[in-house]
Length: 291
Image (cartoon, rainbow, N blue to C red; front, top):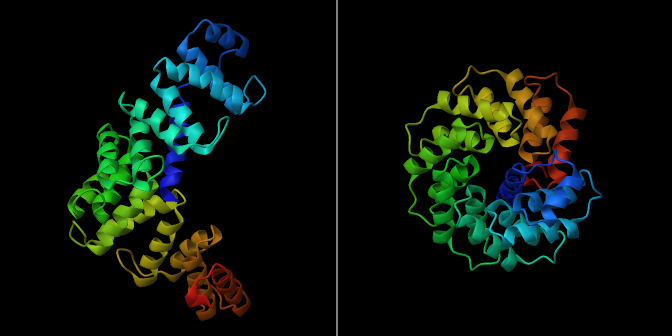
């Protein structure tokens, strides 16, 4: 699931290079004259329904024309349309074909997308080494989401030899660009002392940065650090505050933790009804500790 979200971010990043502020009529005229950028721009206008009625088939038609002229961003977008089955039949092999063409032109977002397809075995045979190869190329161009994925590959030993120091290196590069998932990962690395010296203050720092961006798992982790007094002063009210933020996003372990806080009256007024409410929500998601 995490990888599919990354793939969605890839497409959005590709789409932002379009010229959507231009008049649709002008774009169509230029597109019909064979201008690849205008064809892609018109395709995106149809895709988003901006200035024209939303029409995925028209979007695919114009995007294909630009892709066939070799425009890398259009090739990546057409690949995404095949992956999602928007305007064309869903076909992961066609998706991989077009994304590969863009990746071979060094489009970082396409390199990551191709890496993820190899990671998942979608449209290509599952191959962790190929996944790492393409993800690395995107990461080396500075794409934060690729750096985070490569960090996970090093942490888990997928396609590369397990190496926590390399994992730290790539997580840090992504985290310093503000990517919340990488900040949370770096927090865990410091909390566990994998590839770095264990440092709860550093862990809390990175968890906080991710938590402030709304990362539910980081909010839970920061709450736990306040609960235990690891890297921060022990503070049940702060613990409850961060548990609540994660719980309200539907994270079952946070719902359970918040329920226990209400049950014990830690950081909140003791309230058995509130305790039952949050524990029930966790149980309904299948959390075994809540059942």
